[in-house]
Image (cartoon, rainbow over all chains, first blue to last red; front, top):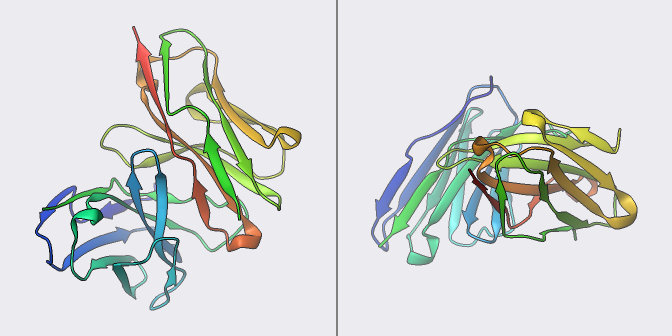
Amino acid sequence: DVKVTQSSRYLVKRTGEKVFLECVQDMDHENMFWYRQDPGLGLRLIYFSYDVKMKEKGDIPEGYSVSREKKERFSLILESASTNQTSMYLCASSPPVGFGNEQYFGPGTRLTVT
Amino acid sequence: AQSVTQLDSHVSVSEGTPVLLRCNYSSSYSPSLFWYVQHPNKGLQLLLKYTSAATLVKGINGFEAEFKKSETSFHLTKPSAHMSDAAEYFCVVRIQAAGNKLTFGGGTRVLVKP
């Protein structure tokens, strides 16, 4: 079974703090993704990576950055957290790009910025 | 650009009755289509996927979906709802020509009454 784990289930941070969200997958997948999930909006792609040290902006990258130093680990960084970044963050991984490949999701990190 | 519309944000059914979750997509290209389910405090799990083979797709837990190109729809159905089906469901489209990124619908929350 593919396993995608995220470092925290719940996180509370203050405005202006630097926040790190970690994601690890154990299936040697090339592709990894970060989404945020908000009610009524579904999931929106923040960043994705198709290889170590490679990254691509998704649909809503503003205010975020990412790091992928090892194949199994993909980190999302909030340089200076703001209240509008309060959300559920989901990490996913998938095999090399192919038509119909599914993504495997972690359990999510619910981040609250106060 | 592709988009996905889930026509109902909430659906309430009685246990043992049919479930219908409606999804329409827009795309200039042939899509892959997915349905994911998210149970409370859990990550997303793939229910089923359409990748240009049979238009009627069977998934896990008794769910199925039919791809109708003429109607640009991919509705999800189950003949008899179970209490464990209470969850949020996401319709998702992937377009190979658009870099294989996933676009999510806004989600449908299903309530199952005893």
